[in-house]
Length: 478
Image (tube, rainbow, N blue to C red; front, side, top):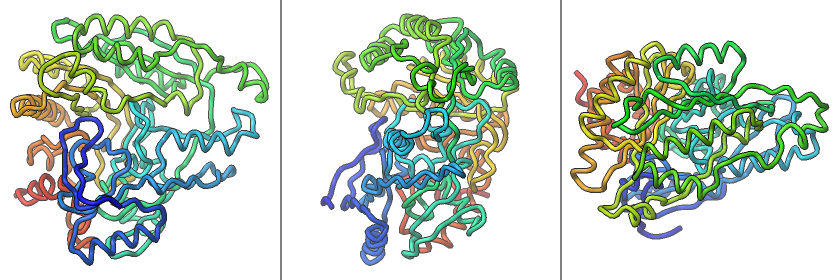
């Protein structure tokens, strides 16, 4: 345990919060004890893993912060059912490595691996990914809640419970994508997928025809893919033209025992951390140059082969923007992320409208990606009620009142554009949505808040995000 500490999220660095103490439990019993301490002291308690959520969902001012990093056990793989129990604090690289060690005696193609994880960064905790209901680049996968067999949770009253679709299903649905408001996740039983050799196929595409193109790729058996669009607002191809990478099962042409050596060769083209650092700098200084270099690299990798689990891993440099701030000059800044969803048929029109608006307000888009997701049928607060196209944008945001106000206005407009097309937005990245937008995107929210009061009548698990953003919005509902 450490005394009073200033904590913040890793990426946006816009949620500095002074907490009473940071607790680091290593066992379920220590989690129970932490909740007992919070109840006795009438303190709020929140849990955090990788600290990548950007809206303050994992922090409570003057509360107790439970760092889940010590809940790091990876259980044995159930080879018959493709399941594994994972401590809530385990981060994705740890899980991938543990699965590889446990199954080292098997041919590579007869092993189990993760089905999906969030892309762009790896050091998210499993408990955190489940609590925000993250998703990856699957072309026809629902969000991560669909990969959860069960969870073990310590509830606000100190009771430890195993939750699943058959055991306390309403509470199970509330915990998945529930931002830690219904209990502290101790472990997760994940559904794994058979490891497969995939071939990456890369081409140039546009958001005008991407939905049709993806439908064709899914029909042809492709499993993963996404499009990175041009982010130079001065270009006529802004948020239209992009590089589209898709992954399909490859024909290895050899016995399982030979696949490790032959199916995924070493020495393939890949961007190093230094390459990524150069691209990030270029994306701030020379967007056309960054896009040209990015496209050239990805086109050169077309035809390369990857394992279905490890191709989802991505390096991330913590605190990278401090280095960029020194290079660029000006006030401290970061990239704030927003993610909005629209029906696939609305993607082209939405991308045109978004590009027009972002041009008009001179928003500084540093990175973007378009992905697809199936409907979420597993959570009480779904962000994907139907198959959706997802547009993720990183806006360069100066840490000044004017800078954050500009980004907030841009994201609010993007949310309006998505809502007007029957879409939604992701709660995790910022808390700049207006109350009416929050309620329109999540009409289940009043019922979820009522359920949370039943489970946690004393508000023990209320984060700053929940207390300052969610509850006032629900109170304003007609």
